[in-house]
Image (cartoon, rainbow, N blue to C red; front, side, top):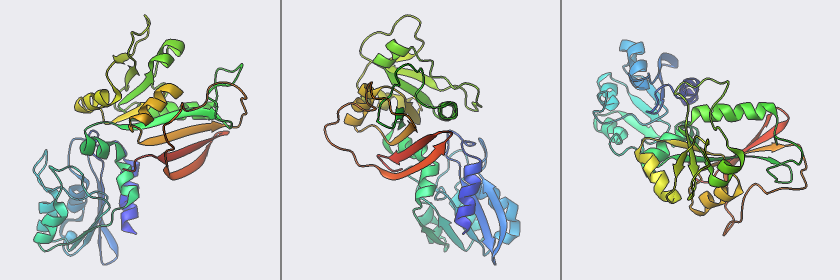
Length: 312
């Protein structure tokens, strides 16, 4: 399916268009791919790249695109207008554009005589999940990350680390991919974490490093102190352009974020160890929380569990 190809193109260029979404597009005519494109950094949208690659062969073709073509004048003219002008016969979009300023491309295409539909693909929505949350709610997409043993403990007596080296490298890759990393005041005081991305590529620079805490931080702890409520601080961070936040704190701050219904996604690195002692991965919750889209994969000797609290 050509939407799968569009998704693959966008996946390979993940983050290229940041802070805008990265969009993949494929033009197919008479069963042949005649043009492909991905959103450029600060430049053309994926649809426009594909149209220009196809040239006259775009006329009568079907366009598969991961996000609904835009309908407004932003940094570029509306993609919907360019698609209709090129004579594209049909458009299949993987997801609706949640940005109220840009949405409406499908309706614009239909008004121009183009057969257009949105298939609402989860994979399409997930590719730009942080941007979608930021656009829709005005606050960051929050990922709660923790390392734990099989018995749910976040510490192993006599060991500095819970998980293996491969998992720890993945965490640095996660930090490099988000706008901000945060812990609670207890973790900041006890562990004095750096929260930076080390020995990995950081195409957008280092993330902002935050501590959510009412009280002051110890001297030498180089973290931004956020003293307001979780809701207030997330709204403020969203206003500052922070689209994604990786929460790495202990069970207390994690439970507080869950109580505020502020966690969107959960990543749990599970080590093949029984600790038998130490704090559990999460503090008490007022009620159970259902998770969706649960998946598991091996990361070195560990297992990474991934699930959503709020799907994109």
